[in-house]
Length: 282
Length: 340
Image (cartoon, each protein chain N blue to C red):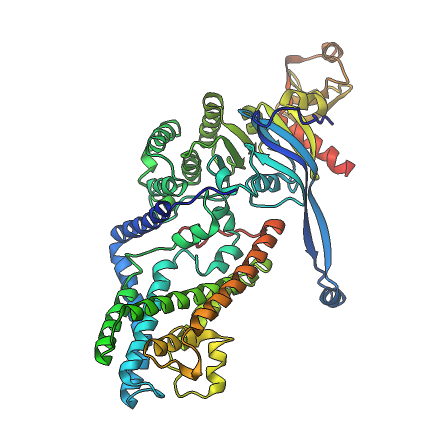
């Protein structure tokens, strides 16, 4: 039997994370603003480089310059949401597991999923990419003269959620290795997610099928921005259904849930004989 | 060695109950030789470590219990099992009376846990920010939060620390802030694992006084582990001693001294450099004509000891006192170790 968690309680948890983020910003404003600026420049550079290539060559593959801009906007929104909700290693969970810090979560009177969902929310220092992404999206939609209907907006939200689910599920899936090998797998999530992040911003249109297919299945970087963007533009690639990212998200989420739960059971049976404080609540 | 049977009481009377709990860990064994490495690839060698071996005990509400034992005896494992951080291989655990594994979130509303080598404070925020965070996460009602904050601020004298960043606190200050934070939700049971670790005499004194006060006045059940037996003796009425995963002793400190032998320290101040030999007494130190002997008064009567001393020429002063509890425990640990 578990304590009931109300919607109000979840909002309060998000609110305290936001408040602490604001307090940090107001206390160390100079450094916080520098961090925000560096983060924004870094992410804009990534998408700008792809956009500049598209500008120089009049598009990439079968995608026009404005379609590439749309994809870059989608990618920036995803990066923005990742940063917005993913501080405190709640997405890069292998760090918490590998450092033996899960025990700090066990002593809180909340289900683990609620803790992890709410503890990494940093709207004041982590919102810049999300805002830039939204601005880019509005520009791209205008340039492409897309008809924005309620259904289209619903699909946009659905694809964004699906992409985030895929990112989190991938992280939790690989992070489960840290239950068994805490030292070796402590950084596995950041290696897998951040290591392939650049690939996710590249338009795969025009690439051979043997490159596209693995990037939509085994290493789903094509689902991070390229595939959903084309679906939203009404051109789902490879004759796949536009619901493919949603099905993939559900599939990988179920696998991740199973594997992570198994790892967690192993953890509470075997315990962790490693504890390091760094990175915890810092 | 004395071992009490778990007393028969209703579930509403006890704060903590462990019944036939066994916890086994597996340790990988590695050999650095080539043969060992090859063997490890094919069939890795594992060793079973029995951290807790069919352990049973109950702790009543409002008790202050010291949980002691040598390194690797199973103290932290017990704490983690009670706190729902580990699952036992077998046996039943109940706290207040809930299952730490099945009712973790409900139990954590009434349980406070503090590990001396860890902090729950937000490193890069003032202490008061961590307290406010806890208020939200634990869903502490406003009045309870205000009252408890006022209480811990006064009793632990942390008023000056509330606006200080956690990363700038000394170890003693950090422990006090952690202890204060742990109490904000009015836990009925507190588990403290080495809370006095690294504290200086003043900070330790303050912490001990505080714990005794909340146990006595608020009826909070406290289970504390420490290597410092003097601290434990001062704090707790009951001591549970664990050795090699088994409860080796359960009783009061006075009973523990009896079980371990009635070890007494005899301190003699001499007028001259003579060092007398006393039958049944062991000389443990001799400095500036001050001689210290160990004697087990369970084996020799006080009158016999005094009789011996009366025959010695040149004694200026004699003091007979209890041996420090640390020494009693050290003997017990050595005995248990040789019995294993």
